Image 1: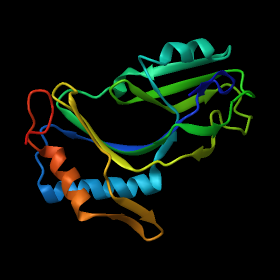
Image 2: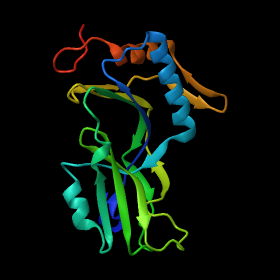
Image 3: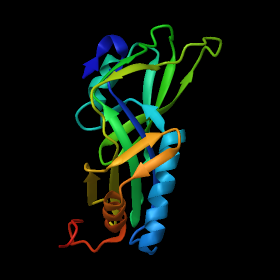
Image 4: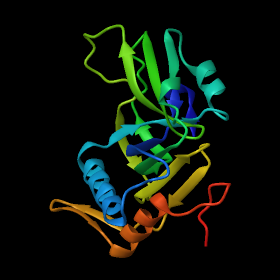
Length: 200
């Protein structure tokens, strides 16, 4: 959902990711440890940001931004070949976000997460005395299960979005079912066909 008054899509994604060489050379136990470490990082250090599709939304965003606002894509953040990006994330399609209307000059910096999906990972403002934060998130609505996404490979063709990822977060840390952990770890280095799909 796009809202001109808010100057940006009213959505949000929380994420962390790690990149490893592809094909993955580690063991199954090492892959499990990698996932557990990412989950702990997600719980404590995940980045929250609006996201958009480069093909479907970028031109509209540029048109709707107020005078003095601009958006810059970090092309260096695109995934190199022979690399696998492992992301832990959840997202909301409906949120309440600060409009940033008190800022006259803002440069939004976007990072490529996967494919045509970009996130606003940083920003620069001309008036550093302003204590508000452009696009600050106030609240989010709806269910938002945690997922693991594998993206990349030789030609950025691998695409595994594990929806049935049984994980819970509490004050004692992260709890994940052994089945979910095994499935996600296996997917990191499982044999694939020429189109990036897992072989049976």
